[in-house]
Amino acid sequence: MTSEEIHEYALGLAKKARSASARIRTVRADVRNQVLLEVAKSLRENEKLILKENAKDLAAFKDKISPAKYDRLTLNHERLEGIAAGVEQIATFADPLGKVLEQRKLDNGVDISRVSVPLGCVFFIYESRPNVTIDGAALCFKAGNAVILRGGKESLYSSKILANIFRDALQKFGVDPDAVQLVEYADHSIVGMLLKMRDYLDLVIPRGGENLIRAVTNQSSIPVIKHFNGICHIYVDKSANIDMAAKIVENAKTQRCGTCNTMETLLLDSALSDADVKKILDPLRAKNVEFFGDKETQTRLSDVKDFEEEDGYHHEYLAFKLSIRFVKNVEEACDHIEKNSSRHTESVIAEDKAVQEYFLAHVDSSSVMVNASTRLADGGVYGLGAEVGISTDKIHARGPMGVESLCTYKWVLIGEGQIRS
Image (cartoon, rainbow, N blue to C red):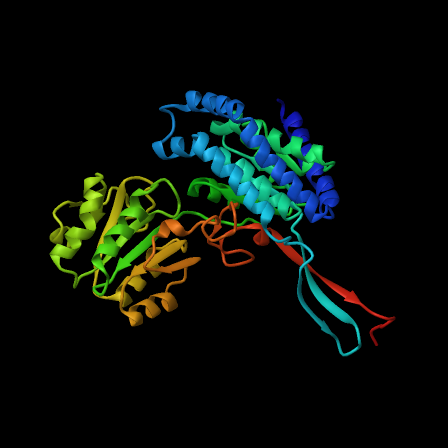
């Protein structure tokens, strides 16, 4: 494609999205839910075709991407069923639109209310995660938004079939299929052009690695909801139930290490005995997790290595690797988190209520937990359904983003001829 053709293609996507958004913002909630249930049904009915297309992606990029990315790229019966069930769950949610968020009468007699409405047009950029094609489309549509989806080149075959299934469901119920569009070309210049089309697009949501999100943020003239990385911490206090701590730590690091809610740094109270530390770390050692830390930590633990990366404790591994540090108390743990966290998810394992309360009050992340695995930081777990991402921003949305995070509001005033004097 020439640069002119690329520009026309990008502009066409943006214009169609804007046109569709004007039509779907008033689609009844029951119709939106029927579309979503049809999508779930079609995902199950077309499992063989979907997995066949996914196999093309897997074959094309085998040994060319990291194990974590390959895992995210992979679809199977269980994962496809999970995607379909997630869409069905979204259909059961209360309509996020038209909700009266506040209402009162002004001194001049005008009734004023604040009412939830769609954001409009969302540009959703993600990497090799074909499931996000459906997650993003379903959440955006439930909230009355049009969406342009741009998955990584690794998942192009998978994303095409999934997007087409969604578009077919829209057409079946008389809804503009351009409410869901997929960028079907891998050319990066298309993304760059769309990021400048602020007359048509209202929000950009990038979901992927830090490099992707920084590149999008630097290029975009449209507001971006960001999640640069997931440097998640667990602090094990001397008051912790050690059996519980060992179970939580193992789960947070090894249950699925390629996700952004995986624990990347373990902070251990220096008052913990060697036997307790061993009990916490041995399940990780059994799974060949590599440990990294400072000289003080290496002095106490012989299998802790020097950091491979210059950023040391401010590093996201997404692998069977873990940073470890001993701290004096919860105050020092919170100071470490303040300095090194990406503001995603942090957890404290402690029985001491004062320690729990200090941690909850002083840690400024989108999710803060007590005696729980960081892997729980997820839209589905939180009852939000499939998520479009986890925002580490503080404006508009924070943490797992479900349907309500894809809405904004407008003020509605009803008068009887009032004017301003």
